[in-house]
Structures are given as structure tokens and as C-alpha cells.
Image 1 (cartoon, rainbow, N blue to C red):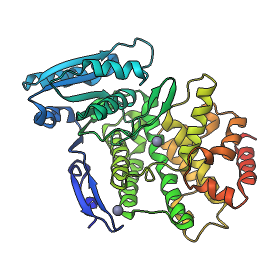
Image 2 (tube, rainbow, N blue to C red):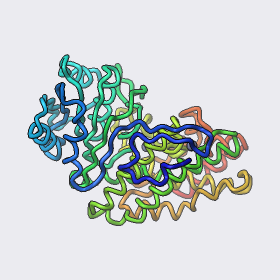
Image 3 (cartoon, rainbow, N blue to C red):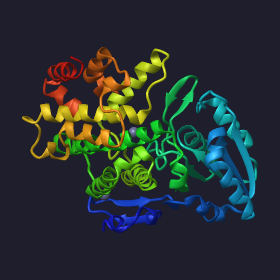
Image 4 (cartoon, helix red, strand yellow):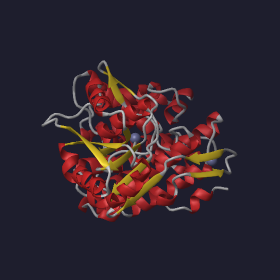
Length: 392
Ligand SMILES: [Zn+2]
Ligand SMILES: [Zn+2]
């Protein structure tokens, strides 16, 4: 029971166990390698697909930092490799019909595996296409920027709208800390902010168990909390791109993915802090502006949600707030890793902020501390108070 807690992250693939939560969990990813020099493991990981052709997908930037080496290694080891370069110049790649269509066109009848070299868009696009064409894919991570490497959803665009259809889990993950250290600092901050957000995600999950009778898996909570502790202990080094700190960050992002895959819900990764982030993102997009990175928004939203727990301490079900540290402590953690600490720092206006506190709970039908405040008639009072404290 709960055997997964005794495994290191690279030992977790293909683990199945009966859990103390009463469910049988199964982690179906086949292979993960997170370490210095991990890219050297790519040929071994791809070995079962050697009979067919390997389509390796990258953009100009990811080709330089990892794609080139990935292709070299596969060729040296006798693989039949085809390359797909997205040459976007200064534009950002969007996971829309054009990008997804390009990948489909480059998939030959004898393609047996795709290798996505990148983080956000390349990962999501290859994940989506392979899920529909029934092929496995391996992700070579180039930035510790988000927790979607081990997640079955793929946020993509259709006719201008963003949605997140279910795709599938990766066959393998390569997280080479020598590659991760070339990531831009804002992507590192974003990944770190997304990890900090797990603090209130877990507290919110606990609240929904106590106040709304939701299901919870303590093994997953332990898994995530341990990863957070390890990542926070080394957070100082993120500013200097210390490989060990970057490895701990990618590990925390990956382990949250493992926890999500075990319970088949995103509770271990996403709570009210994500609702605020999504609210801000939708507002920016509706106004034709580029939103901040997802994880940076999640990071600054986390101490805000901690303030909700503080304000509601008098009526929370017994023991609920215990999992949520004071907001000052969370702000200090963000600062330690070099990430912004306040919505003010990232350009969220007072009006948008206040509005998001009032309406953030409507972003998705999921019980959270904001719903709890609403149900208890305290939402407006708390929204006014927090907004005044932060924006004056
Ligand atoms: Zn997130
Ligand atoms: Zn469980």
C-alpha cells in the first residue's frame, strides 16, 4: 500500500498500487529521466519504436538548446529520424489549426513515435495530435515552466477560442538540468509560481473534503508536499539557475502531474489561486492583450487565497486552515525564488483584481475557499478588505 512514497521520481513510471484512500492507482507513464545529462537517455527510451520513423518536433529556439542533440543521438543510435522545425521568427507559436495541421502532415504512415522538444506549445500540440492519431510521444523539456509535462489535457485553440480537451499522457519525459538552465528567467519564475500555487491548491482540496464531502487521497497530498519542501529548500538557487534547484523545480512540477494522474482529477495542482489566474487571463485576452505567464499569475494569486483562509478562520471547519501558511510566509517563498509577489507587480489593475475576487469562483464549478466565502455571505466584505490592503 502507498508504495509510491518509497520511490524516487525516476522509479515511478508504470507503478500500480492499492492506496490507503481505497482506490487502486496506476501511473501509466513508461519512462522518466530527470537529471544532469538526461538527454543521453532518449535513445534507450525510444528503443521500442525503432522499427518505425521518429518525428522530432521543435522550434528555432528549442532546436538550438536540445533538438539538435536529440536528433544527433537518435541518428547515432540507428533511428530513422524526420525533423519538423517551426520557424516562427519573432512571433510566438500558437497551438491552433495551422500548427496542429502541420504536425499531422509530417506524420508518415510508418511514423511510430513523436518526440516533442520544448515546453508549452510544442508539448501541447504534439500531445494533442498523437492522442488523436494513436501514437506515443516523448517530451524533451526545455523549461521548468509549467506542470503540463505529465498531464493528459492539452490546451489548444479552435477558431480563435482556447479550450483544453483531454489528450493523453506522455510515454516518456526527459528533463535534463543542463538544458533547463538555458531557460529564460521568466519561464523559471512561472514554473516556480505554479509550484507555490500548490500550497493553496492542497488547502482548498482539504477544505472541499471537510466542507463539501469531496474525495481526497492522502498519498497524493504527501507526494506533492514532499516535492514542495524539496523545491522550496533549494529555491534560492533558481535566481542563479543552479542545476540542482532547477531539477527540484521540474521534479515538483512533474510530481504534481503524477499526483493528478493517480487520482484523475486536477485537485492536487489547482485550486482557487488558479481560478484567479484564469479570470485575469480571460480578461487580458478579451481586451486583446498578452496575459502574464500562467505560473507567474498563479504565484501572486497564492498569498491572496491564503488571506481568504485567514479572514475566514473563525468559521472554517476544524483543522482546515492548518495546511495553509500565513500569506506573508508565501510572499517570502515567492521572493526567495525570484518570482513576483503581488498582483500589483504584474500589472493587474485594482478594478480587475477586485472583480476577480468577487467572480473568480464562477470560473469553474469546483468547491473552493472563494465558494465557501460566498456561501457564508462573506465574499464581498473580504474582497473589499483585501483589495484595500493591497491597492490602497
Ligand atoms: Zn498551473
Ligand atoms: Zn490514493
